[in-house]
Image 1 (tube, helix red, strand yellow):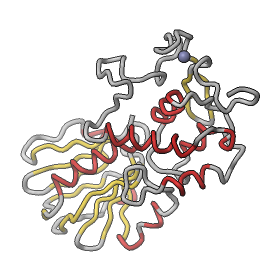
Image 2: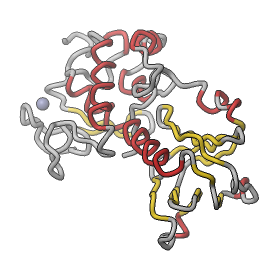
Image 3: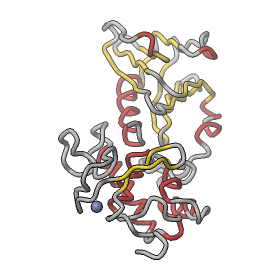
Image 4: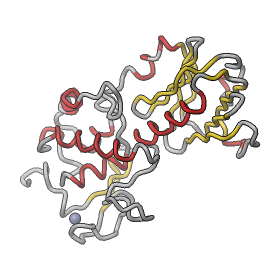
Length: 261
Ligand SMILES: [Zn+2]
């Protein structure tokens, strides 16, 4: 699941392969950018901003991409043949490495000075230098009646949480996903826990929340519908919430529910 930590890790891999090297090949396989060509330009850095990836060039351009649900990047030696051609949306290569973006949800090319246009709406980045827990809480509470699970996913409040971290953080704090934001006890601790979990997983590129990295053991509730809660044995439930599925333990997660704490 591409959440903020995976995007952070991807940015670092892209940075290591592309930064301070001249592009010898670029191939934008999206109709609007079919004629774009960055050959001869030098990549200065690759960085993440929430779940957005920004690859900047010396020529003052930024390649903005977003993984959405199914996207991924692969870095391979430039000499290796390209695989899965029909899924490719973007290739950026230098003499040594080739970075290939598959099924990217967004591919845009813009001037670096215009980056705010695509990331300016984001709240504080959980893994960014701009992280500001007070501001994140302030934004979460700006819509006090909004269910906390929806509010945590809204990248305008804080940037980096996806469906997995949403479910796991609320479980660990015992919070009902449908609790209104302003009924949630101790929101500062909730956002700091999210930051700590993303931070702990960012170097690995995939998520272990329980401390157990074995397959099927990594999460408390996410993806575990109908399975027994690891704490109390109650069946984990799932239900559509906004346009995503929320997983939770109805026994462990009562905080913020009206009439219960
Ligand atoms: Zn439980």
